Length: 278
Ligand SMILES: [Zn+2]
Image (cartoon, rainbow, N blue to C red; front, side):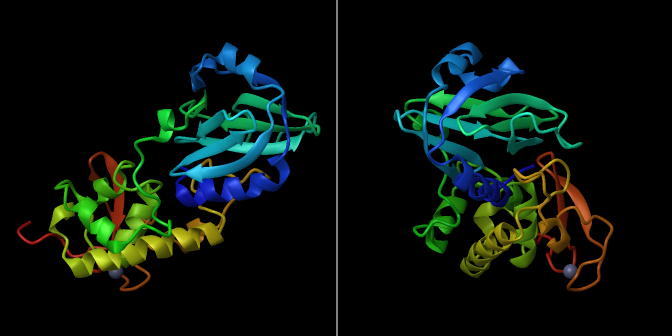
């Protein structure tokens, strides 16, 4: 599933081609993906609108339009975006096109989504969609102190709390597992039980794993592709995520997989000691 580094990669890949372009014809093949307004209204309101810039907030892609309106996309589990010339044949991995956004330079942006969980919104005020998100973990104003304050309010397992978008935006299953590994913290520890030293380690680990993954163009575990159709390479650099049964790159212990609040969670039982009393 695309997380902060994958969405950041997509935004950076799309920006040069899309900035300053205008939408032309819009085709919505799966109307339920349009959360607001209706698919029909989006199809009428978007053509002619110019893209001023593209950005990211958490796992959302944000297209700021010259009209002041904002087009917001979320890729959820299996969504990806492909930018190609109109009429150019589709790659093999893009047989689940749910929406086509035509552009005024003869290109088109395709929303490919096998499981049909991705969403599209066109709103005047972006707060309607992203207003509740927690801070950006790579933002200049995000500090270990803020992380500590936020974690202190939650007694759920740290793995689950890191994936809560209202606590911190952009982290999901893969990067929560990687960050906890580098911080030597077991995923089942209660979030409010971490010591100041552990929170400092976790803060640094979050920044390290996210920055490195952006540098690698994200992780292509299943459906994620860059807008060119290329895969990212971060999956080759994972230490625990999706490495169940393989050995820890630090201590050679087999990586284990456990469910944490219904999320498959990978960790090293030696590098990440279980909570005391369990
Ligand atoms: Zn280990």
